[in-house]
Amino acid sequence: MSAATPTLAELRTQFRAGKEALIQGFLESRATPQAAWRLVRHLARHADLTLRALWSAHPMPQGAALVAVGGYGRGELFPYSDIDVLVLLPEGADPQGVPDFITACWDIGMEIGSSVRTVAECVTEAQRDVTIQTALLEARPVDRKSTRLNSSHLVISYAVFCLKKK
Image 1 (cartoon, helix red, strand yellow):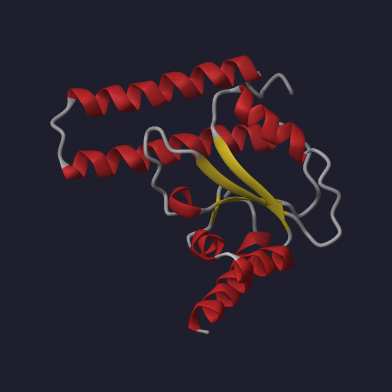
Image 2: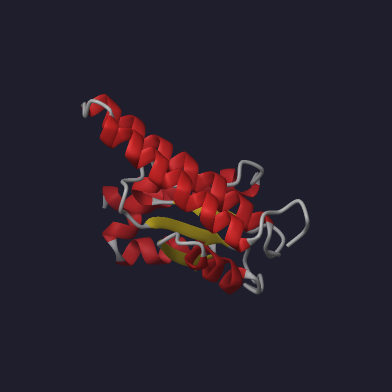
C-alpha cells in the first residue's frame, strides 16, 4: 500500500469505529422507522468508503468492477448483516489480486459474501438460482469510477428480468 493509502490496521480501526459510532448513535436516539432507515443507509455508505479504499489498494485486472449486490446493492446494510459483493471480471481476465482483496476485507473485520464472475457467468448462475437473480437485480457499482459496469449491469439486469418472465 502506498503512503497515501491507509494500512490494513488503520482501515480496520476506521471501519470498526465508524460502524460502532453509527450503531451507538442509533441506540442513543429515538428508535423510529426513519432512524432505522438512516442507520442502514449510513452503514452501507460506510462500507462503500472502506471497500473503495481496499479496492484501490489491490491491483485488479483491467476492466474489473466491484459491485454491491442484494440488500447492500440497494444501499441498505443492517448492523450485523454480511456485505454481499460481486467482483465482475471481463471475459478471459486473470483474477489475480482478487483473493488478496477478499482476504483484506476479512482482515479488517468486514464480513463479506463474495463471488467472482464474468457477465456470462452471472447470467448462467442466475438461470440456476432465483436468489442470484434477485441479488443481481439490486446490483450497483461500489467504485463510482467503474464505467464498464454500466453496460454490463444492463445486460445482466435484462437477462435476469427475462428469466423471471419465463
